[in-house]
Image 1 (cartoon, rainbow, N blue to C red):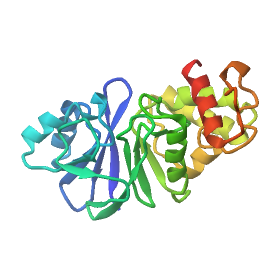
Image 2 (image 1 turned 90 degrees about the vertical axis):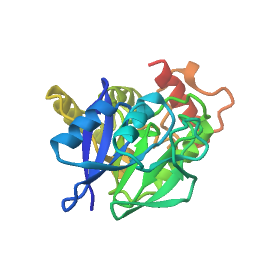
Image 3 (image 1 turned 180 degrees about the horizontal axis):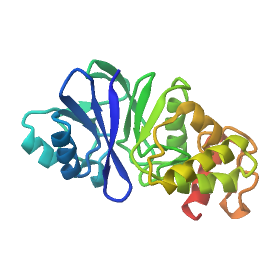
Length: 257
């Protein structure tokens, strides 16, 4: 199986670097900045073999051009409907690609943006800005119903599947999650662990699908009681207890938290 290392970028981004123990080839996911990638590759005697893009935002794509200049002719995989013009190999929902002998299934996950895709495998998934540990991406382009449908696709992954998102938002997300479910024992225990990690400036990722199903309120939008503690101004007026409506109420509350 591939090894996955985090390359820190900006204030809270992670650029994921995939390698194997018997090769000097590496792939990176969402390189918003080329400089830390180039430094990491040099320090570990690695050569960049390809790039995976989840969506078009500049903090996920800003380093692509410089990396392609330095490592000529490498493939850049990304969503077919993306406004980012640096993609050489376009992907749609249901496509399959192989990276370092690992097959990944492409899952379209519109919500944060309309072009967002995730790279999924039974053992690990790169979820970009769709699924965070304890949270989800802000809805810049899509709707709550779209995002809930996207989450449902990720909820179907094996519970042991590791979740590699691209921001260190976990601690802040859990503060919100505890306002939604203050008596969730798994959440409270996980929050203590995350607080300890962050006090040492250590990474909180990857999470797992199983972990997120236990502590992430957005992943738990199918629970009828998930919004019972939300202030009334954040609840949908025409609420029919549909999971996507719960998701919408949670997202509105989070936007104002």
